[in-house]
Length: 351
Image 1 (tube, one colour):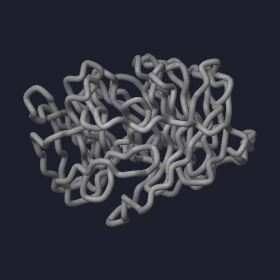
Image 2: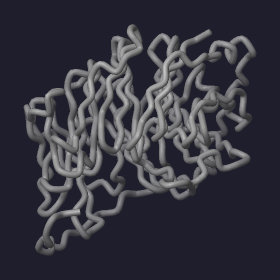
Image 3: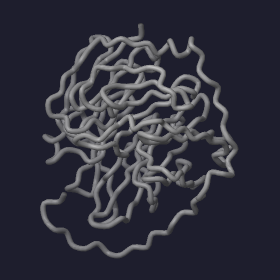
């Protein structure tokens, strides 16, 4: 919330994207059931717990590209955890960088730099762990702020999603890491994430999803009929997972980049993220993760993490949290798992 009342922004017209209203034309995607041998790969034991006292929300867990560190991103702080030493060796309290903390956060793949926006300025900054700004990336709309940030896997590009105060007008900007503006587009969906190949990105909000090239060309937009709070992409199988705490949607992305052609809907039999002091929302970027051969889903949930098949059957439960787990992650070799809730972060090791 801004400190003072801002002047009214000028009116702008938002051109609606063409949206596929139904998925009924898509061919059903048949995913093989995971074997017991594959399921047993995900037997983990807790090896380290980090207690939290004031972390109101846990938004995201990222793992460095070299597999050495996990980064737990919360409403107030960013923690770096070493898998080798099982210690938190770096902490950045971003409330000390900007008043109120960051409104959008992402971390480079090597974990050396952080990009954060805030509700006081129409820009985001590239920071070192000392909190000193290194680069600026601007929202060019008047009276707007950075709501969401995504860095490409190769650390070359940054997506900035900007929202205008008191309006629903949203714009997305693609910058190079050096600060050069590549494109500026009115995109209705405020949340965007790159695909692992770095050549595409997916934008989503509520029940609308759009698939883009990195050059800003729209490939396809479709309506799921369910709220979307999390996205995961399996690069090996070209599978996209979108969903919430009751329903998931898995789709096949065609290699010719022309469309999304196959789909499967998964209904979960219960709400595994019951509301407490906060509810599940689209800022929890790693609430779910598509793993294995694209036929297993690791998710957060009530008092722990869960392993599911693509029919919505619970296969494993990883307990130990008091509060709801809103972020999960695996190391690249899958030897470690990290689960995070407002009360604690747990590092798990494969048995």
